[in-house]
Image 1: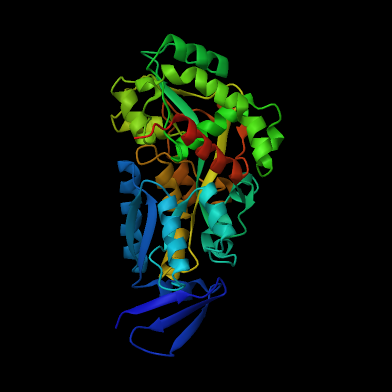
Image 2: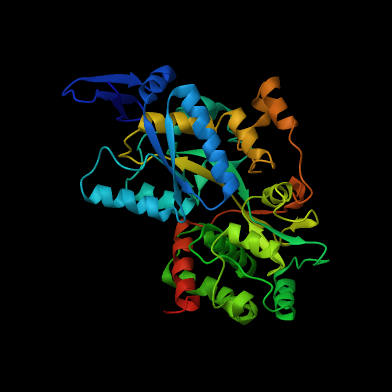
Length: 408
């Protein structure tokens, strides 16, 4: 008979056999084999952005691996907005569905992580740092692995990849890209219709707003504190002035915006715009390898630095298959999975691992990777602009919508 197993906390896993009442077995999470045993036969519903074919293919590969290795079935629930998964958990909690939830694992961003943590929608105990492969995470070298949008992670989400806002262009068309806010404004005015960004709350659209805000704000330290109505109005006034000036000269006269990074890439490939952007520094080279972009595409960042953070996976408090979700999260942290993800022929998403901590065989997986022509070297990114407090993202999205979303 197939069993349904649940983790009651990061310290114990409660396994209950279907059709049986009152029979339970507690398993120690620190005994990883007991977690593997509990996960066998479980179905994990992984809620993750589904807007990029190469990422979807990677998740399919992960599903095949965890099925073969651990007997876990991975179902990719393709999202266009992470908030949809969060809202599902909120709805289930309001309905009293505190067990057997429909969401097992979420590819989460900082804004939604902060919201879920604040509402008590995550496993409360430190489970992520207990994963066997967490020992390889580069905690010292990558401080964004322990703070997400200034919110302490505290083992409530597991690191998956690194992100850095990167602009890219076709050097055969655009000889010299604009690398300052002033130059970008002038270039947009001189080249109407050739620039756009994604509409918030899509993550790349919100990230673009934060990037611009960093460039115009007088006191960047304000962004590390929760936003108030007064501080937000004062800090963002020059941002809205800047966007108001460029807005009429955007693609489609600013009446519509791109949906996400995939559409931005396609607009560049189709010659509709001249500059695109991504939160994955390897995406442009990956697209060149996939023959989605010409090999003359190159990348750049703005002269005052670029937004940088880490992305994670997390488990809701009421997930039906917590053991299976942990097994998947641990596999995503494995050198095998991280090296494949970093391969620009596959995805090109930078690793969260400390390569120096790996053994020779594991290091060889990364040594075999090549950096493509459109991928910037680490020293070309300049200063990393850390994520503001999560309250800024919420208010930026709301104010942007008031100003630039046309009523139907």
